Image 1 (cartoon, rainbow, N blue to C red):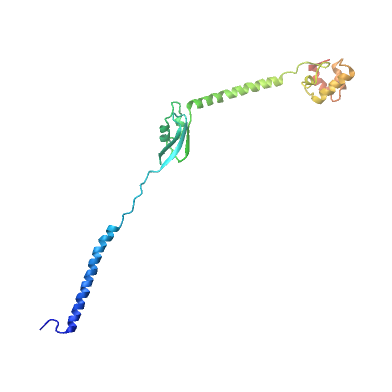
Image 2 (image 1 turned 90 degrees about the vertical axis):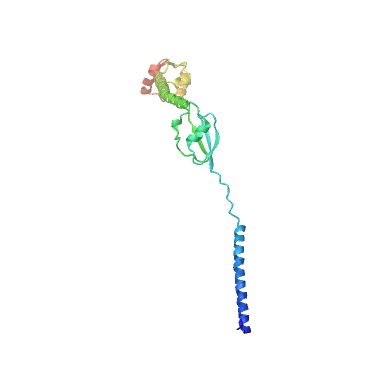
Amino acid sequence: MELWEHPAERYISLVSLVVIAISLAILAGKRLTEPAALILETPPQKSEAFPPTLKVHVKGAVQRPSVYTLPFGSRVIDAIQKAQPRPDADLNALNLADFLEDGQEISVPSKNRLASASVLALTSPTTSSSSSSQFKQSDKSKPKTVHLNTATEADLVQLPGIGPALAKRIIEYRRQVGGFKSVEQLLEVRGIGEKKLEQIRPYVRP
């Protein structure tokens, strides 16, 4: 018995072989193209990472005051060490363990400056007290003796209770009467009574 005696069976067999061949070709093509796709894929580019930095200004009792660039996370002591503190730097006045911030200003104080400030603080009360005492003594000093017939307006206003207006009236009265013969004549000047006369009597003479 011959294989594929009927033409229909032969046709079906051929079609099946073609379908199988095409399927195998497709599968082979996929396998060949997949590695190529992998080869064509470019790995993501990695950007170069630089550690973050900050800038601080160090001044005061240091040998090299300037602006310094330090790694992020640095502390105050790191910046001061770069600026080289002077022997008189008062580092205890600062928090050396504090974290730095970008744009921060660090002023290192001097021990000599603090000592000078302490001396001024100690001497100031004494100086102030001395000045105050001198002022009080000057304030309490008795007015000098004023001669009514030769006194000027400036002399008269030094007397207790005598102002510029009253001094002018005393001089005008002296001009009218030709001079004082006694201290009691002041009672004739408008504005001077017994009480004011007794107040200035120790300091005036005719």
